[in-house]
Image (tube, rainbow, N blue to C red; front, top):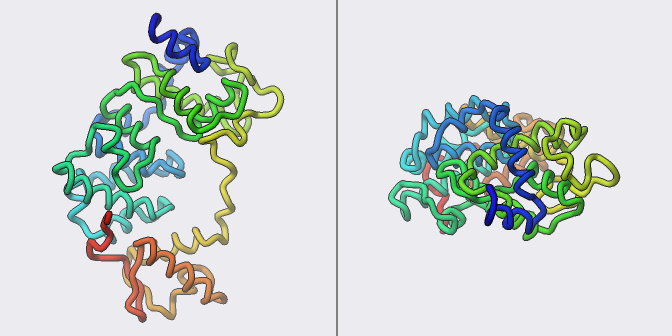
Length: 305
């Protein structure tokens, strides 16, 4: 991996020696995750959407179950959006299920039911951003594109020794991919951030590229405030998110009487809050109401127009 690859990596501070060391370290250590055994764009897309802001352990079982029911975009698009939301319930951030349904409808309408393999086409899908689009290309097609999630952004900021702007972190990710190694490189970088270069208590002594790192666990952490690096998540217990999740989970089993709404959401003594948060679910396409009951949407009312 020399020549053009070396020049490309050195432009952003990740020389070939470092990429080689990381690949040697990573290949035998990659976590055994079920979506890493497939190369189907829809299956990869579902995994990546599920993994957004959700722990890997929670996704492992749910990914296969979802695909058993909705094995392709056509089956997903044909189902009522409420069925998608019900199957998603428990993963959190249920709005992702609505966007996935919208994406499936768009893929059927514009791409003959096949998830596209071009970056611009993927980015035009509802709810698909730069990370998810590049992840589909790298993990389904082996494309030499760099993906940036919070783990990767943290690794790159620490390697550089400074906070990175959005354009910088994406450019560095793209330029660091060794030619022909898009799948392995991105999986390895993700695992490095997840198990070694962690947000808290990073295991710097175990890092295969420690010698070239500008931070090495000393001084202010350059990842804090760097583009793409997530901050601390707001408390879940007692939050609106918790109430939303409780209502969606209950609606997956059947309608909820309007009088029972506060208790279902955990706010028996605050019905105003329950109705406010439930109204937001309606606005997000996650619920409907006839005034007396609340339901999951059962018609394909959510469209990308």
